[in-house]
Image (cartoon, rainbow over all chains, first blue to last red; front, side, top):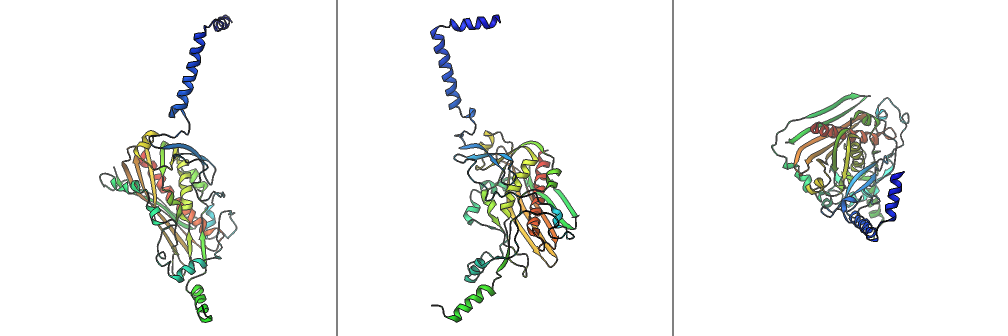
Length: 188
Length: 193
């Protein structure tokens, strides 16, 4: 109680110079906060021209942290499709399970999608180069190899010893065969 | 001007030389409950990067001479599933959309960066069913962008009577991708222990 009274009395007796000092301090603090990049959320960092944004997972909606180039926003599309489905139930793949027995609401093709465009191209002979290729990036080859410096940098791994093999195999479950396997190429 | 014989010939070429039926296969692009339950999240800050072109990877491997044409939209499902797997498996997960560099990693105090690329996709169709296999190459970099580990992973799923079910080929593709991602996650968690 006494403290409060003293404080209020002090404020009443503050000289005009003191008020100006406080004002200057508040303005300076505000300027520091606005100017200093590290005190800002999603501020563009000049050194790497990057910023932090939050995106929602296109299928689950769960948010995750993204470091993006300057100019990108969480509204800028990254994924091609954001249709949401239920999680797949792999019991559907059991040969004993009939079609429709396990609910499935995901995308499907009933084999009636026509490939007239492909057939047209095949007739014209333009698709020849593509047939037989296992993997086709839909974009041009140039785009597919763009910015691949760090991708190729895999070869930089020092001391090419092959070890640390991790293998997780699931030989047979639910009437179908599946495997999951990983093997080191190089490691330090 | 195309005469009637030419027109019929062109029509035969269009319909006879190439099948007009085919499968356009999009996986659901979600991990199964089994994956989510089986993975223990690691207490680690980690960044993931893949070039946006990965999302465009498709395969037109029909898996056999007598099989209908099939188009597998591999990357479209692989990208979201990989991100979900890292979200589930690491406490502090960061996805890099910006080009990775040592400066960037240091700026955000990221000790490890994982870069994944799809290397191969195999499809084998026979009378009884279908086997799919996806192979990837993963490189783990430290904060100086020095590669500390590079490894190949494969995931497969071999299923009978897959085309006779609604969603069969789609879920089969999803499972092959999930098995590949499981191998990547286990490998990365192992080397960071």
